[in-house]
Length: 315
Length: 315
Image 1 (cartoon, one colour):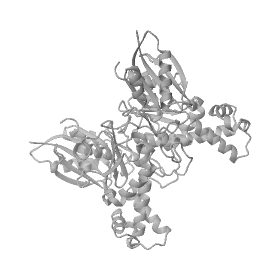
Image 2 (cartoon, helix red, strand yellow; image 1 turned 90 degrees about the vertical axis):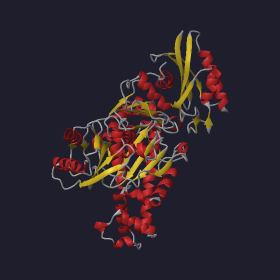
Image 3 (cartoon, rainbow over the protein chains, first blue to last red; image 1 turned 45 degrees about the vertical axis):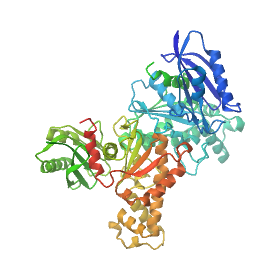
Image 4 (tube, chains in turn orange, brown; image 1 turned 180 degrees about the horizontal axis):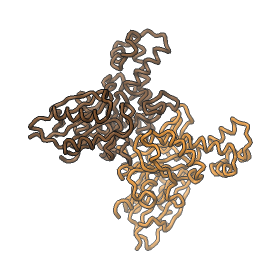
């Protein structure tokens, strides 16, 4: 029998389910749509069906870890997630524990990613670091003194919802000017749309139908030196870099690890972020803090992170 | 013999030295001027003289804790403190250890205050809280999972140097728009001076010579309903409250404890801070996080905090 932990990554669009051994290898993987289920119960039943479909005879299930937006480690519920269709408090841990008679643990998807980085990625010897996920939104997981910072209510690490402009872009959370409305795949898309509207500059991005414009189009235009695309990366890096200087003033990490769709743009996003970050740091911190791409960037970090919630417990 | 730890609070103006027993009682106390010493060595020699002057025959010295701006727990040095006359790296721990042949520990003054709150104040059963000191500057100490967050380089907890306005007031740290240039005794003084200059409103504060205007004058005017003074507290609370919502998005504390000269203004500063804080919180955190005055407000929290660095080690 092979001991496996299930890692579940609840994304806005898809939910990915993987079976992970203690070396951080994903032995089996599948996915379902997150959206399109009228009730949350329909969705959790679909997850269970998928797990049963994937479960091999030689797997010994040691637990289920779930990474989800606004996942609360203490309550086991997804709470008021702005990017999901179901509102309120969603008891996902209870459902999976009952169905599979095993332990289940839930946290913020970015917190899970930070655990994944610590167990299976670049942060194996690190005590103080921050993981930033640049996807549909901006997620973050903070590790201090070698432990994930869950906070009193289990919901710490929401750097994407720190405020950049108090009268800025409307966020899915209902407030204005949150960092993630600028620094995320969605954010850079909005930036490009604003730039296209407010300038007459030539840009290949004007040829992409607005409804289908994605951050990958912006990346593709940028590597061909499209001026608007390059400016959008510069702007995004400026907002992100200087705001992360505030994070340093809180927990003084050794490294920031980046992943998510937008991080795949590599230097295009990392160089301006790093430059503005360094420029805005308090003198004591200057030149001391690294920014790197996640060690799990080419792997399914979200799955590994969710599974790390279980593997982290000395199994 | 009575076991005592010395707590030293290095302030911009005065340095206070206290002898503290394990119940958090200050048995003896004295102070010297921080400023007016050409060399840092002159200053540390003066501290040692004062300690020898105060040391009673029945004291058994178990160690010396120091709280100082930009105090680094790892290096034992005060590093680039903007509010002190001496620049660069100042090795205070080494001097005291050698002189008194005992252990010495240094940290940020606000980190010390947080330890003091945990050992001797209101936070005895708290695992996740933040202490904010509103004095000449704005200091902060963050406790997560029951431990002080020192960060990788030992200099975490500088919320006073998160940025409110990127083109805002010039800060002692050399950057612009730091929170402490608005939310501190110095900050509210600047706010009042700006308000007096930019309006024709009557105010008792116009009678105070500009050079001698202090936050206590603003407090005294505010309790007599002086419009400018009240507006200044409202403005300060707005800047502080909404910025602390960013802190919640990082570490999700259970309580913020406030102390320092400006916190003594009580409701005048606390009510607007709390109102804007609550208004700007992410939905998940709303209504969950307390803001209170420190349990050590009437005591010398800085001394107790510095001594707590030593008492914290199971003596």
